[in-house]
Image 1 (cartoon, one colour):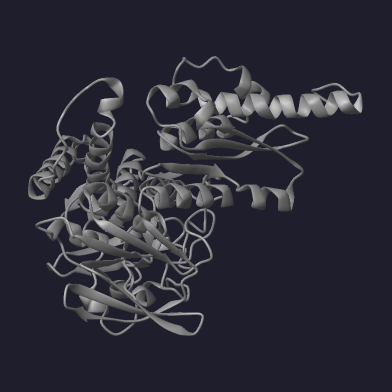
Image 2 (cartoon, helix red, strand yellow; image 1 turned 120 degrees about the vertical axis):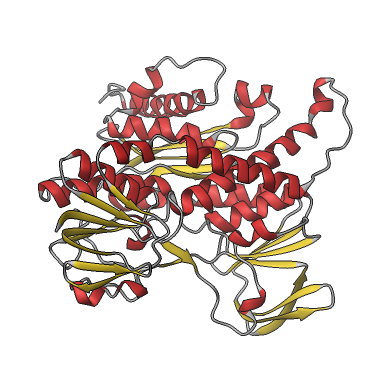
Length: 469
């Protein structure tokens, strides 16, 4: 009997296996498909490669402003997909994680098919592999969810773009979360006529309201049709030039047509085939594995990490989860899930956030909010990227940073610095005084922090008190 079996070879599974083995546990890693999971083969790596191509096209179109004359860029989509495959192969082959696992003695079973529990401590895979283990870590991931309406089989998911042979003339994207927003942004840059549909009152419903508003405005300015609070989809059907979506909007049946329809309404846990009841593992009503702050499931010897928990469908969260779950599986429940998680999306413009939104912060804190616009910032003006802002939300009494929200060029990188500052417990005064290279995009974070200091300084002078309280 082995010490730990890890089910799933994505970021959560790889880190879990690495951490467990590094702590001295005899570890087995079983993955249904390719090593690396969706993050390497069908997630951030290939999507970011497409986003980079879209960025190159956008940059080419502003070369004339800098005195550089070139022809109108054209896209060879099959050639781009070849580049995507090359990047995926490079990332998979050059990562040191596979070698590290082998060096640590992890027994890896790749392309093993679906794993299932036979009893509380035994799993078996479609390939016939069987393993008995003291503890298990579930990192099975999640799959794209489809709408339960007639004709849903006619629609595509973000994964299906790898099978296209050309850019669709027109595109409908249903769902304006992170995945849908990236699909819409990328294909609009590639030349598709894009219409975005979101059932919630605003796109990016989980983001700060100012972020949703700014990104929606930028998308509309870029020619993307943005439909918020559109109602519900009734059915999909074939149309002469592609597909038709029939939807209900305030009781009125409406029609939208496009060459291709991509549904991006979220994910479902790949947990149904695991036979979790045999191990005593409970799932919630949506099918995600229920875990506590230590990532322990309802079965004391089973932990879960990453997308299968439904907490956050992000590679960065999966990596963090993998470390926490393996540490606790081997050492006991000594580690809890970190409270700071920076997230973002490589759209145009980019958006990113860490911590509390302004509205959430106001429910629990007396806050100071400072926003610095990109059109007043040197680096964004130099690069011809004036769209966006950096918002800092902080506690008025403790001066601790509660959240940071950015729209604009390099937003994802800017938020990483804010996350480090939050983990370090920095006050916004400390951040404002931190000397950052000029001109860099991350400097906008210090400018926003300086605005917060100045805001409180002005208030304290008006009240006749010290600016630092």
